[in-house]
Length: 183
Ligand SMILES: Cc1cc2nc3c(=O)[nH]c(=O)nc-3n(C[C@H](O)[C@H](O)[C@H](O)COP(=O)(O)O)c2cc1C
Image (tube, rainbow, N blue to C red; front, side):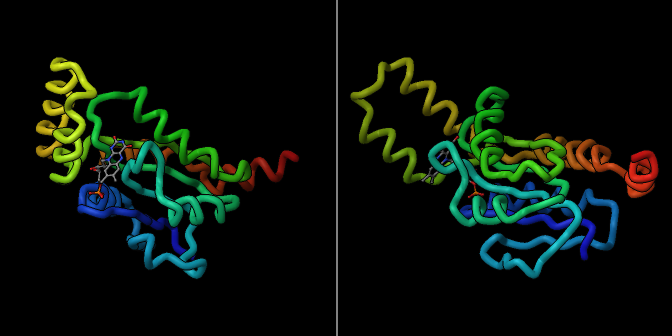
């Protein structure tokens, strides 16, 4: 069994950039990175870093299937979304995936950042312009324009730090055996 598996869903490449950085930051040769479309039950690991892009506030069915299948693993989530710098929104995305995670897993944290949005989203904004005030519309366009710069170097650096923090939440085998000895 692998020590670490990084599995991600990414339509336009933003989440893959974060996945690549997390994979790079993992301090072991016993690791693999795969697109969730290639995932099958045969890829197994002690620790999963599961990445997805926000799709109407949640993750795809493929990611939900993976999350639901996990038992007694260390699990972290990561991903990208259209909104930037909004911890409450990132928490909500984390929770939308968390509901699918069986309770016997050890959750070691999540990391989300902004990603660029495809031009189709801008077209949709323009089509529905009359539903928003000028101030709201300007804000949406500003977020969209800012997104074009992400994930940037800072986002990748934070992903790297997150990886280190997350793996330090994994109980060591030695600790496990001590606990077993006590009980
Ligand atoms: C159909 C669609 C739905 C989206 N829904 C959301 C959403 O609910 N919340 C959000 O913040 N971003 C949303 N986005 C933006 C994406 O999450 C964002 O562009 C993400 O970085 C894409 O990641 P990827 O390049 O890995 O596919 C949506 C984008 C698309 C195309």
